[in-house]
Length: 81
Image (cartoon, rainbow, N blue to C red; front, side, top):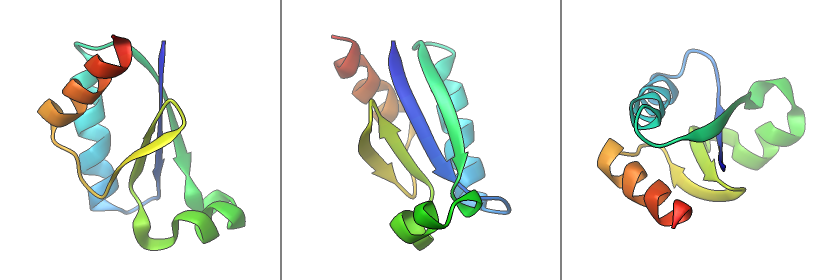
């Protein structure tokens, strides 16, 4: 199963947008999603700072800021292959 981690924070419109794209793609491609609020851990704030949202696929930082559904879908399909 593909593992996706979305590093985000509250009151972040880009984070909300990425979460929506992930949900849309998730209707057609199975994966396990973990959403992490970087502001709950000082080490995550230091690591990601203002870079959020960050989307990792199977532990690899894959997208930062924005991702379009077709691009994410293709990336996940390659991961399944």
